[in-house]
Image 1 (cartoon, rainbow, N blue to C red):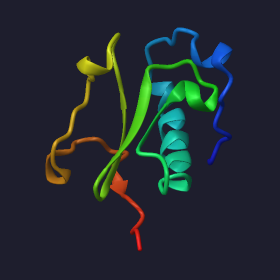
Image 2: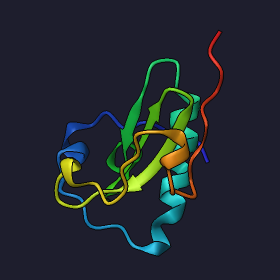
Image 3: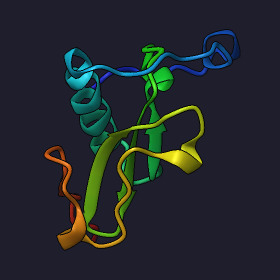
Image 4: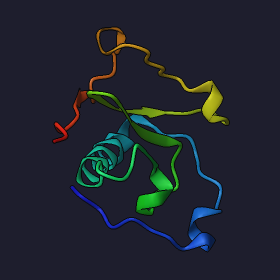
Length: 98
């Protein structure tokens, strides 16, 4: 589901919590929202759609991916360099650009 992007710094500056399996829908919502804004956005965090969870969605070339992070984005629990190396079930081809 495409969600509204939040710009309120009071919400965006709040600490987030670790994601659990029940939060998978948040990752899908992030991907849907990122796809809808892919013409000017290459990545989003869950707090940008009002969810205080350690989940990010990124677009890298022709691939979109949603993954959870630990305390720092540098220590992501899922990293991907190439589309064929991605093991994330949420990965989908990015929309074609004209």
